Image (cartoon, rainbow, N blue to C red; front, side, top):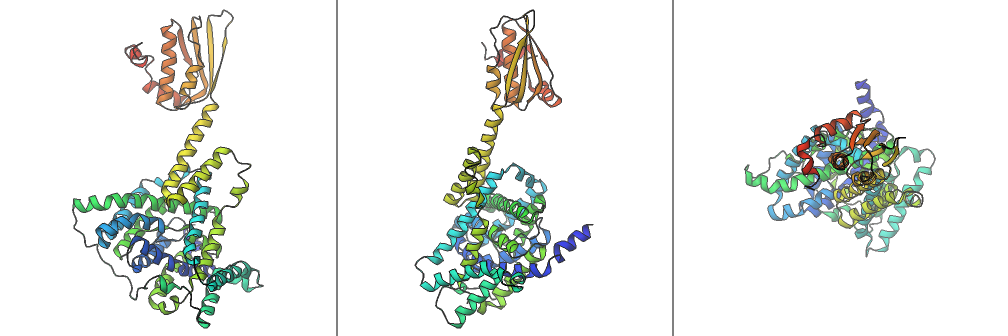
Length: 497
């Protein structure tokens, strides 16, 4: 069964995977160069990293068909390090980033993706779509009319070519767009911005090398403050991208395996003179939209990238940026969740606030981790507030009017603890109080503290209190941390009153 699964991952979609990988490789070149420039290093640092990370994650990754390479989110975190300490410390940081990610993988931190609400994922996707589109604007600002004409023509090819009988289903339209526009630009010698203008392509294969830094505590003090956020941002973007590709392909992925794979890939990148990277939502969507589904598409993207920049550099340099801009605009349009705009009217206000907040923070700061963190925190706060509203207490008094029974319903935790206390009448003249917790659950120390206060306030008024109906989980936490059965702690919890 395992062998069949591996065969399907590699050979279940060969033609489409090879073609999709080729498209992705072409789209990776200008981005890898651009991200290298952002980080302040030579273009080959980003290109070597993209090759290495794509190839390693093709074999080790937990999400077949996902594309990982050098990314803008990671490059932004490297700027200060490169400026103050240079390339060798960046390579050392890349190695440490990989080690940290492997540790996170073995700690199974991938499971924390379950804490990311759908509204956060939607906001993350929409923000990335906006950022991808914004990244194309420099190519479209103050450009000659030929750029606009070729970009429009490229979009026309991308969206109309699939309707061409027979051949439209065989070739991915983004690849056709790049080939046709490149041929037009070369044949008519149109003087517009090309891939070669982005930076000099490498002319040699990457070589194995260890970072030339001293192995001491001082080096660790320099690189750790950069490696830790790089590891977190890299895994966050990779796991979010894996979740999105899961949805697009209606398949599952192994998030913890992906964490470890990203770590090994970054170690490999650092040893080959590359910068740290992670999954790329734009290229992953290009891959899926072009028909790529298996590991072969990721492997082809990495290998073709290296072959093209090293051996076909004279041709690659002539690809007009307008062709790649058209492909990336298609990606941004396809990535954006247009239904989320329609759903603003029907979805709860809290879900809309979470989604929009995530979008605004990511676009404003260009910090994906911060945007997702804000979204997750808002989702947790809204959830806690909503759950607390479903906690209530009703009561009844027996015929002798000497015993009142309080029935507690719902979840008692930090946000509903004070509300729980307010349901009880401590001044009522009754001899006995029964607190029925059969339909309640106590979750944390705040809940236990609230129960202690209720019991001790009643006892201070001379009322006997009996607690019934505790479930096993609530009983465990109350027995362990509750103090209402410990006379020596009564003064402490009542504040000495």
